[in-house]
Image (cartoon, rainbow, N blue to C red; front, side, top):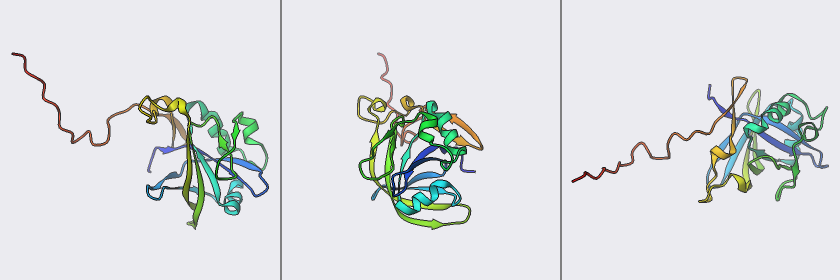
Length: 184
């Protein structure tokens, strides 16, 4: 019941360079120093063997515009279709791993698996972050990622939702408020 979850597109490739895209809703940050992330994948998924073989993947964040592709990549198997071709997503070469980046993604995170934990219905892939690519169109004038511009998408109980309205900033609940100057 930890909802909503990020709906991300994870790209993988086997040792021969054949790639695939899998939709993952169980992904997250694990550690800041060293930078680490995790994804959980079912062993019966086509991408699972690729992940185990190369121990590399890319987490590509999704946007509202990518909702159709995100859903498609979660319900179609890479055994049967080329998901890049069918969704009209664009492959871009990664700098540290063999799996491609997705050009349309606002953020792509290159990862190398440190550990695989078989936990039951899913296996947890604990990975080191090797590189982060951020599309410059989503950066504000201060060099900060602008979530509202990116229009990210989340997943909750079989449905996709857009997000982006800022409700506050870290620590806003305890910041001292400035007193208004009284007029004389």
